[in-house]
Length: 199
Image (cartoon, rainbow, N blue to C red; front, side):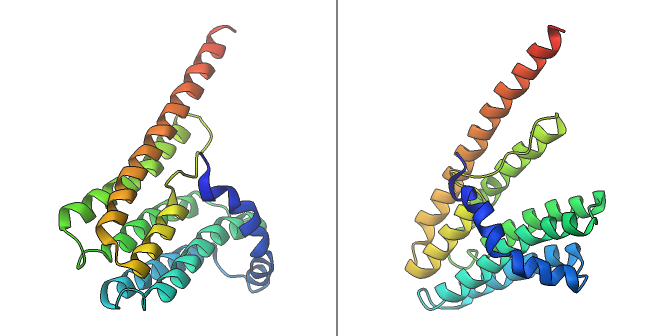
């Protein structure tokens, strides 16, 4: 179920030198969270205003940076002992905002109802994971259509012009991802309750 999220440990290793440099320069993890949102906004603008095909390299670069910042902010906070509840809140809000901002780049290119549906669906997996974490379960991440896959699909749209099919896949795939996460959490929390009840 992890999809491209399974590559996260490898990706984190590739960013280790950058992370060390950020630690030396005492860069704030919150600044990286905000930088990720800015990159998402840049990708949305490029998608909306540049011709298909021509926009793809820039959209890909900005979304790769958005994912890098999403990886680095938490790692930097942990490395420097600057994990805070406010930082965790900003991280979650930044991730949700970045998701929605990227999809807003489709507004000039597709029907409003489809962009809105994709945007709503794209947030569902995270809400399910956060609800599970609030109930005491581990935080679930990954696909089949998680954050990384959504970014890849946006690049596909920028390269090909297949805006409506890509939005449909994001909407349906995100809903499926949310359903799979919910089913897994339901089993996990049910088992935890049953074990707790036998003590």
